[in-house]
Image (cartoon, rainbow, N blue to C red):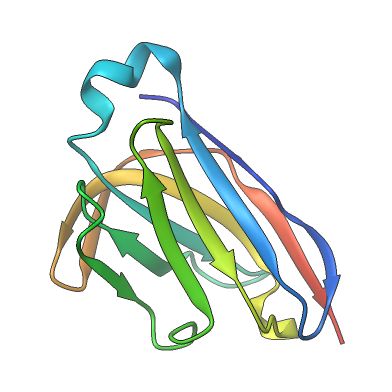
Length: 123
């Protein structure tokens, strides 16, 4: 499975962005069985979990830092996962990575990573 993330950019505090993560065509027949997640890594910090969604889209989980501001969703017909980010803060500045794996409760175990997309929030 190959994942392609996009949608990052430079925005101001309070703005919104929507990130997308598309699976490669060759993964189309099997990709929908995987749960999907978003992680981020800020400069000088470890990668951290942001949000996860199960294979059907019926269950989601979020890191406390983004609850109420970010929304994860997926469209299996398009093999795409989205991360809608509202009310962005400077502390949201990071490289955002999408992943495919297993979501169990609030734990997400990534099996495949996409390349990152940079989000920069200016104050």
